[in-house]
Length: 322
Image 1 (cartoon, rainbow, N blue to C red):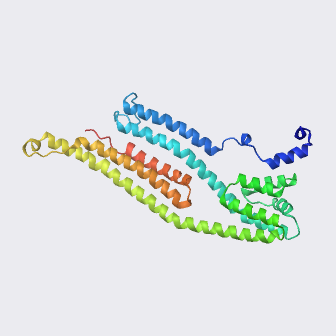
Image 2: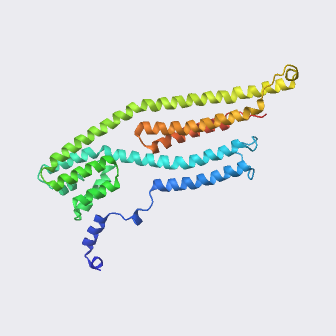
Image 3: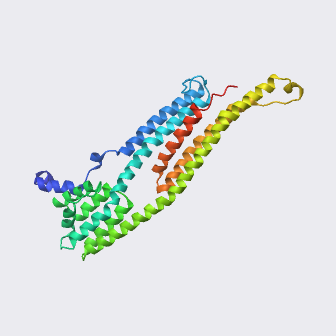
């Protein structure tokens, strides 16, 4: 009752201090992509199972006939629906957070400079919010607006940490909050935090540059593997079928007991296809984890490798008829 009869300014301060509720936030775009992709993947996997049992006969490559290959097509499409939307959405979110973090040391230095003129931390943040910090500008303006409405600086920093939940931002907010509570020269603390943050970013960039070499090696190795499998499937296996048919139609099979079991050639092609799928997913995840230590980046690389490998094996390799 007291909240309902409170002045509008007081209610506004309480709303800003409380931050967005779970109902107002809703599901993030990444979770929506994951749920939508999972639903589409399950639907495609059901079609794959019905194709395998013979209930359906949906072929993405006409003229091939029903069998295990059409089933694998829908399994791969379902896997792509599961990993691609979530992987690209999470990668985009991480790139956005990375751009925000890149300008964080500049903002901390500006706040420190304002604090050296005798301003409180709250006033220094409001003054520094007039600067331009790329994607970080909107988050700073939200924090400055909260402070102008009377929200405590510790609460405004906590809400900023919730909007940008990265280890770097959490560490900076924790140090600044405790320094402000302890009193003394917050400007000196901010300057040191800005310097340490920039050093951490430079160290991370150096690590990524060194890991980029390994990611390149993984891509090269995968495409060499793809080319090798393509040559085997497109040239070697058809020649095995031709040679087997020639031997079986000649007198060699009945006289000398020579035979070539070319009927097992489609099984060899199936093994090649499964190997490509497994390598694409495994190598892609490894590349992403090596580059920035995040699975989402790996799902993005896995999507690229899996798409290229599957398309080449299913639509560029000639259909094998035995």
